[in-house]
Length: 256
Image (cartoon, rainbow, N blue to C red; front, top):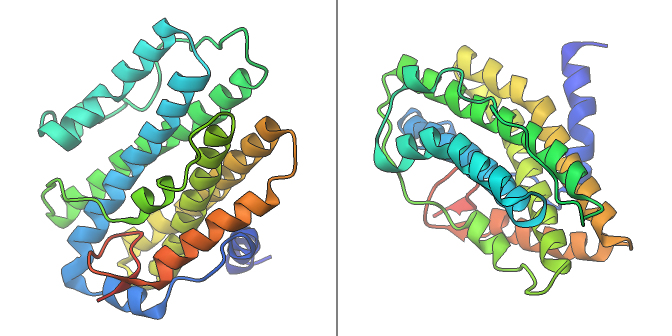
């Protein structure tokens, strides 16, 4: 099997899961050299937000107070850099590992599985954050915080207000965000410089696993068929991707 065949095999479940492909109009905008800065900075922030979302799920649903505090401390150097302009690339090196053991709540049947999957995801997202920052430094792109696009907010607006449905919705949304990220890395890679292209291709395996982990957890917690809910949220996700979007970002819709 060639490398290309391997990645196509990896991407097929992603394409089957998503209800639309990224429009060519977005790709045409994304490959413009003047948009590289926005793509990389928004990608950087997406990695941090993905990790934060996973941390929120662990803190809210799966761990005791001491573990919740350890998770907050784990993220502090990254949040200081992204939101307060404190720290540096050098200072973040090697900080993607959690230094303390996270303890699951004893009264939850799914806590340990949620912790195991989400802690691995967080480690990878924080490592990717550092890798994007390295590429930015190499390209001479200075970090600045930019406003978020509508994508994640639009999806999260669909979350139900009662449990466990709220948690299930958040997990399904996490699956769509990871799947869309995987699809866009694959779409963008052929149009990027070699170093970025190789980096994006290297991310496909982890992003594909992340989306599966989210879906597995959602199904496990639901104890019933959630295919209709997955389809409903998928339609919202596709609408965000296929409709005109005034703010160009990594997960934005059609540029206008």
